Amino acid sequence: MAKSKLVEANEKIAESVAGGYKKIEEGVVSGCKKIEEGAVGGFNKIADKFVDNFLTKDGESVEEARERLAAEQKEREEQSARVKAERKAGMKS
Image 1 (cartoon, rainbow, N blue to C red):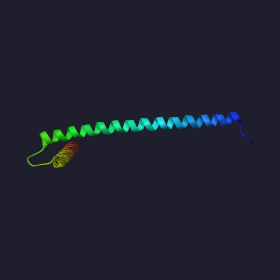
Image 2: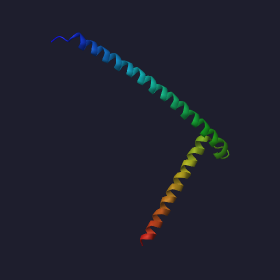
Image 3: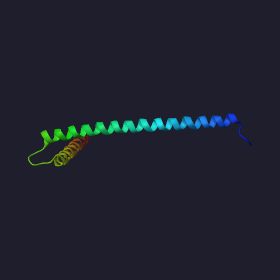
Image 4: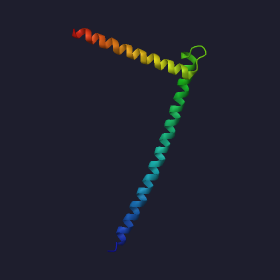
């Protein structure tokens, strides 16, 4: 069964619209990714500078300071969880 000229024209229009949409979508997504990378990169530079200036100890690198701070934070969280569990257990008895 032969397609009418109207159906063929409609299919071509649909393909063109879908192709145009896809190009716009790819452009927007790539633009957003570039903005995100710039913002995250800028934030990380500022955060590294802050850690370097205020949180490092003598002879400690920024990476070592971050690891130490993360370990200290984990220890504080674990201690807080233990205290909460002890309080909860104390209230039940």
